[in-house]
Image (cartoon, rainbow, N blue to C red; front, side, top):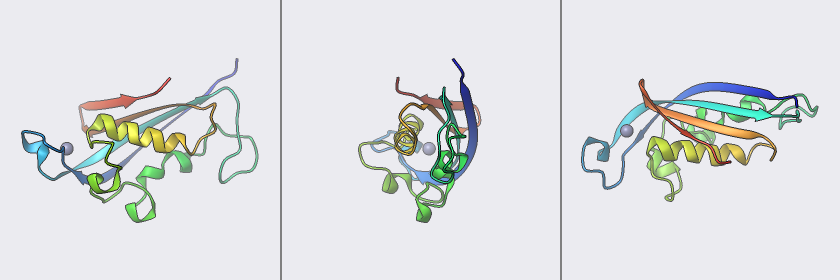
Length: 129
Ligand SMILES: [Zn+2]
């Protein structure tokens, strides 16, 4: 079976705090978040921007979160104010939130994986099989 895989990485700068956290992460502070998105598909599709079935997904679509918060992304915001309250702003749940929001923008047969990093040596990865 043919298979394509796309990988894109980007970053955004935002503030957050972990609710009820006993320690410095409970106070408002900022990170340059790094995001790594992987998508796989065995057939190609059209995209929001291209009518021909030539892509797994459009990189512009995958990189929505990099946009300024005033344009629908997550850059330069307080994540606690932008993400719905059912998501805490841990790296785990930011990855889940980006996954859920990205999934809505993709065709249903595309397999998705999202990883988020707050610091250079740590990543949280989320997928839902
Ligand atoms: Zn933090």
